[in-house]
Amino acid sequence: MAPPDSAGAQPAFLQIQDIVKDFNGFKAVHGLSLDIAKGEIFALLGPSGCGKSTLLRMLAGFETPSAGRILLDGVDVVDLPPYQRKMNMMFQSYALFPHLSVWKNIAFGLEREGLPKPQIAERVEAMLKLVQLTPYAQRKPHQLSGGQQQRVALARSLAKRPQLLLLDEPLGALDKKLREQTQIELVNIIEQVGVTCVMVTHDQEEAMTMASRIAIMRDGRLLQVGPPGDIYETPNSRFVADFIGNVNLMDGSLQAADGEHSVVADADCRHRLAGRIAGQPGQAVTLALRPEKITLSRIQPEGRYNQVQGTVREMSYFGSFSVFQLQLASGALLKVNVTNTQRHRDGTTWGDAVWASWSDDAHVVLQA
Ligand SMILES: Nc1ncnc2c1ncn2[C@@H]1O[C@H](COP(=O)(O)OP(=O)(O)OP(=O)(O)O)[C@@H](O)[C@H]1O
Ligand SMILES: [Mg+2]
Image (cartoon, rainbow, N blue to C red; front, side):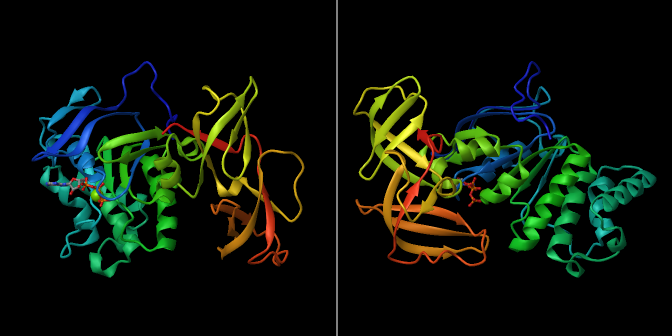
């Protein structure tokens, strides 16, 4: 995988510069800029209608930007038709030809390009091997499982040796278990070929598993771009914190800050945070606290900060962990993840009063 923040001396492999898409007065993409390094698997993530497919379609050349530039390896491709861009887009529906065999489906684009027959055969065989479908070469798409069809579509996209692979919801048609398995396979294949990849998904777990970097989009704009771990651990806004994973959002005010710590109070709790929050006492501060950073206990923990008592209102069992919802004095709910390390739980149940606590570095201060 490419280093996540490879904004080094060389210009990025894919440069998206101030791209706008205006559909008759409706701006689906608002002056968005993004640099993607060679070999990266980059995921565009965001709610339905935020402009992910529109951006991908502009990269592929199926949609013309209203303004802005797209440079691939230093060359502006905006005026090039799709087939002249060294990119290939794989659609969600795979768009396989039902009447052609797997072999013919993969060969199709190469035949259209007029590649000599022996070369076509060589590439198709190599692709079949790559996606482990050699024994299925003569089958028709309807004789394959969903996961196998997905691999044929991928083989077909890669056969033309694109420099940039564009994937729109590549695993959208697969069920959860197969999806998880295929995510890893797909990453292995993409890395083996070494192709740079931009993928669209609205599944956050998929983006986290597959991508070297993620961009969170909302209303045609980028809210945050970074490696999955950064986005998850240090979201910059309420929207990102809430969109990726589960989170407790707390609105408080700054009480004090010295060189090493800051104290923020909300209706239920006094939070002590590692590091100094800039600003005046009384200023509003929003904190994000992930449920898995919180520990539950029956007895009150020591210390004056980062703890709160609540009543168990909900318990949801997910197998490897459970999510408890505690009702706090103000009425607010606090989500706490508890790892089920023991087969039998300690008997904590609905209505019990328990203590929740966390450490000085568990919170994130949100900027917006
Ligand atoms: N050809 C078009 N004409 C007018 N508006 C369009 C057109 N294509 C897309 N839009 C609008 O642009 C916005 C972004 O659409 P887009 O398909 O890019 O969303 P998306 O992020 O891919 O959503 P999803 O997750 O549902 O696929 C939507 O509000 C959509 O209605
Ligand atoms: Mg879409």
